[in-house]
Amino acid sequence: MQAMMATLTAMVLAAFAGYAGAWYAGLVEGNFALLLMLAVVVTGVYWIADKAVFLPQRRKAAQQLQLEHDKRIEALSKQGFQQIEGEVDVAKQRLLMQPWWLDWTAGLFPVIFAVFILRSFLFEPFKIPSGSMIPTLRIGDLILVNKFHYGVRLPVFNRKIFANHDPERGDVMVFRYPPQPSLDYIKRVIGVPGDEVAYINKQLTINGQPVPHVPQPNFFDSDSVRYAKQFRETIGEHSFNSLVNDDSPAFVAGASEFPYRDQCNYTVEGVVCKVPPGHYFMMGDNRDNSADSRYWGFVPEANIVGKAFFVWMNFGDLGRIGSFE
Image 1 (cartoon, rainbow, N blue to C red):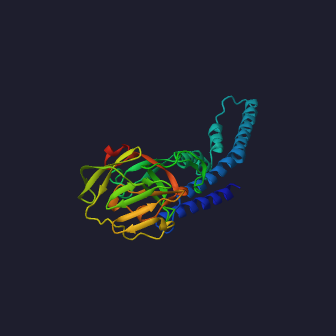
Image 2: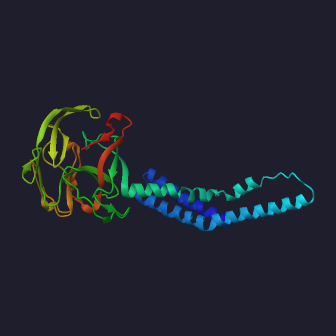
C-alpha cells in the first residue's frame, strides 16, 4: 500500500511539475487559478485520507510498539534487570511521521487552501507589465486587487455568486482580456452601461460632458526617455493624471472586429462609442500608448476580476508603495 501510494504521488507531482515547466517554457497556455484549484483538490484528498486512514494506522503501529516494549520491560524486570535502556520514543516518533508522499501533499494542504481562499475571494497580487497606465501605475509595480468589491465570483469559472458594488467611472479595474480571456489586463473604467464615450482630438467626453483636464508639468518617462504632456482629470470621484503625446495621431488605427462594434463610430478625429448593457469601456491613462477599448472593444461584466487599489511593492522604487486613484 505504501509503495503504491508513493508511486501514485510521484506521478501526480510529476504531472504538476511538467505542466508548470511547459507553461514556463511557453509550450502551453497556463491557467494559475485552475492549477491552484487542482492543487487544493489533490492535497485536500490526501489530507482527508491521512486524517481518516493513514494517521490512525500510524498511531496504531506506535501503540503496538509501545505495548511490545512494555511487555519486554516487564519480562526483563522479572528476570532481575533493573535498568533497561531503549529508544522506543524515537521509534514511535518515526512511526508517527508522515512519509514523504504525505508530507508533500497533505502536509501542504492548509497553506495551499489558505492561499486559494485569499487569492480567489479576497485579494490577489498582480505585476504591472506595461506602461499603458503611466503615470498612475508604472512598469514593475506590484499591486493588490480587491476581489470582492465587485462581487464574489467562483474561481476559474468567474461566475458571480454574490453581488456587491458595480464598477464606477474612474475605477482602476483588472479584467480578463476579451480577445484572450486567459490574460489579465488593467485599465481605467471610462464608460459604464448606457454611456456615450467620445475621444475626439484627444479630448475625452462622457455623455456630452467634456472631462476636465487641467495641464500639469510635463511628465518624464525614464523608460522611453522622453517627455509627455500631463493633465489632471476628474471622472466621478476619482482625480488622476493622464498623458498625451502630441506626436501621435488622434485617429484610432487598427481597431479590430469585436462584439457591438456597430456601437462605435471611427473617424480621423477619433472614436465615439455607445456602451452596451452589461459592458464597460476601458482606457489606459497613458492615452497614446494603450491598447484598450478603442481598439478591441467593450469588457463584458463576466470578465471582471477586481478593483486595483494599492501598490504593495516596487523593487526599483520603494517610494511607489501606497494607494492610488
